[in-house]
Image (cartoon, rainbow, N blue to C red; front, side, top):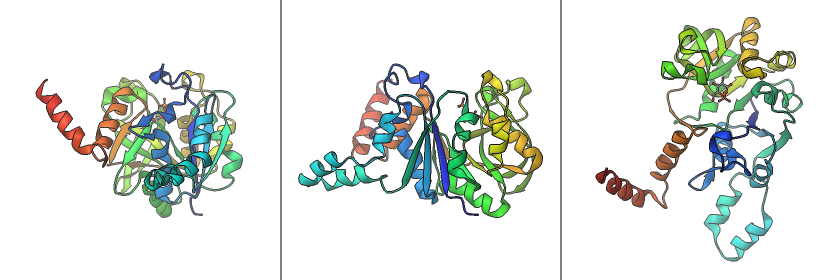
Length: 289
Ligand code: G1P
């Protein structure tokens, strides 16, 4: 069956970006002029996803408003002949985006479980908002291509410095079944470097078969007292194959300050309105260091 649906969990508190995230969702923080969550939605659209469910928490109304039509703004821009701006505000209003609230912050696995009725009995993808991915073929599409071959779940992984294993879910890879696609022995959430089975970390894209929901429904809290998606995936892997797909493109971890800054600078270097000035500015700045 074709993969048509995506879940974007967006219920985190965003404490790493306080005070900016006191009243607005971290997913609305912009990279120059575009909220980070819009990059995720655009990756979904580019991969051929038809329906998106955003799982929100408190203070997430601006996300709903962002993906809704804003008739007043559209009429205003249209009457002033600002067609380019009009196209920008209408960019993502054409895809079906649905919302559900995660009433209690019980963890990523619990957030994904909220999508059970939306997904039904189909394979689907989970896209985390903290990772913006860039590659010739969108990463979500790469996972969908792997699914076409294997009909099995697959998670995106990437090599990370060994000392960072306690920030990620980590896989213990087995054999490479086709280029960049690994069989996995087990999955472990945020192991200490001395216990980590490898330095292949789960980054924020998952393609999952619907059997994961039955597991999530009974999943006991794991690390940090949270219902961990990684634990449920490890259980799924015991009854059916779950693959790890190594991502070779560029990843911006916009869930932390340095990643956010890098994304702003590099997006700026391709942004038609500011790229030339930014190059000059950076050169001049570097000369003073
Ligand atoms: C979550 C997952 C973790 C994964 C990470 C990727 O952790 O639990 O397995 O490696 O996302 O960004 P979080 O970053 O929410 O702590």
